[in-house]
Image (cartoon, rainbow, N blue to C red; front, side, top):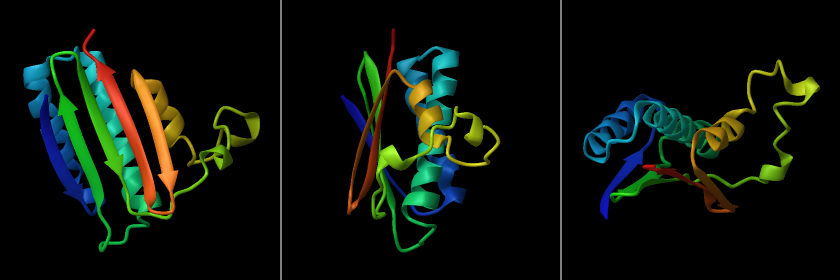
Length: 134
């Protein structure tokens, strides 16, 4: 199992995450479509953690743990926010929400990865995204 750990404080640091994912994939060799899906899911999750979880507070960090072996890549994204109830997120596919500009992040992330886990409490939220090689 190989591992990388990163701390991100602001949206402008997203390229660091993208660079690490590209580096990992040179070795892991996830197919192009699955890699793009993972890249979109991880960047969306990190941006959500900075903007919504940490409320763009430069004193707070988003912690990333990226692990991979010959079968899967797992990315954990944890913010230092106050947590939230995922059941309170409106369904982005219902008619009244179709044209809203926000509220689709979790829905999109979940649809792009092979396995999605979500944990939240008063110390923040954590997304665990997994993509399998086959």
